[in-house]
Length: 93
Image 1: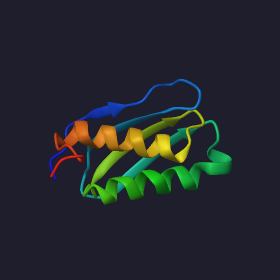
Image 2: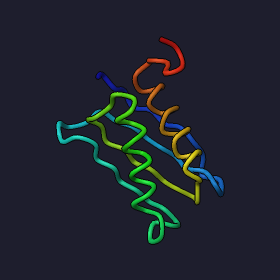
Image 3: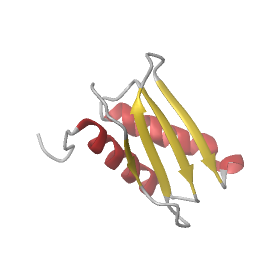
Image 4: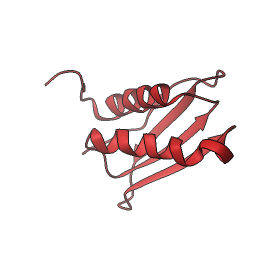
């Protein structure tokens, strides 16, 4: 799948910024900077990975800056970044 650089989210408390860039053939590379990484880092990465895989994206570089976002927010921001990166609207066939 062709990707362009994209971004979704804010740096407000309770939110996350997800940046997507084309991959380098190594699968999903997730770089996470989070205020709660010690407690929830693996969960945040898993939500990002599952969301992208579910959207058919399996090769991308993801830079995520988390400020305590809930899973639903992480999914929403990751989906929005993916839609912007691919130009494919996931809510339409």
